[in-house]
Image 1 (tube, rainbow, N blue to C red):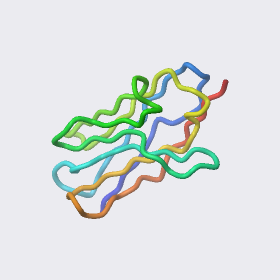
Image 2: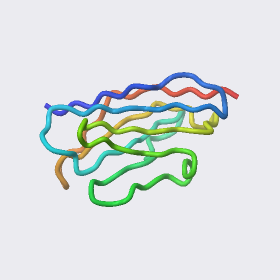
Image 3: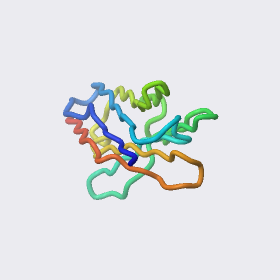
Image 4: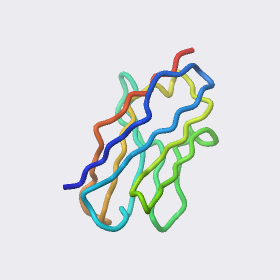
Length: 117
């Protein structure tokens, strides 16, 4: 059974930094795709950053230059380094993974990030 467990959320002031982690388990090999999504208050869930195992990562325009996604394939762990955080980054952040291309997308339970001005 595939499981994704996020950690690293919290409360920071604007301009601060946080590092989110997502540990994957229940599958062999490396996930074909892993990414971060978020749901801001009153908004629909949106993609933040993602990485395919064979290509460069992508970022939402709103986080380019501030967030960095990386993955440690040996540990099946995905990271999101978030710098220069803004109040509008306040959201529940979710990790997602597609183990096999074209198959199910699995989700973590989410971790809250709150940025105060």
